[in-house]
Amino acid sequence: MKTLQELMELAEEIRTQYEASNAKNGKEAWRIRDYAMGFVGDVGDLEKLVMAKENLRDISDVDAKLGHELADCLWSILVISKYYGIDLETEFQKTMEVITKRISEADV
Image (cartoon, rainbow, N blue to C red; front, side, top):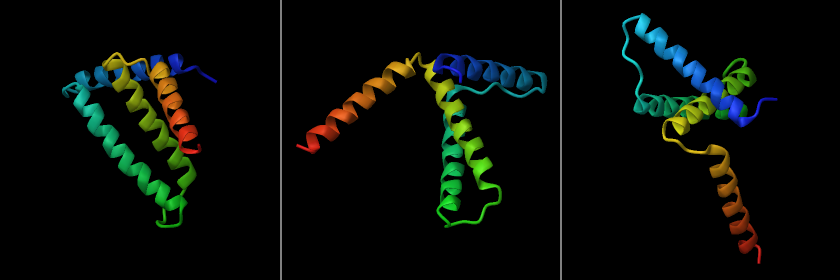
């Protein structure tokens, strides 16, 4: 299994390939806002797949599509975090500590 750092490097490699492909085809390179908008669209697609898993929608091959959409969302998050220089691993750990503390304080 790849580390988070390896996944971030792969995400950047793919982003660079998209940028080169767009340039080759005369398309404008995506800016960070475009990645953010793409992420929002992917989250909408993810919700439809979750609805299908909960028997609220009919979507064929839902498990494969769900895995794909989750990976798309992760890719966008990795690209956005790199752009803004966010240490995602550190921020995730800090956030989980805050949530854990909040939960334990609520149980008191």
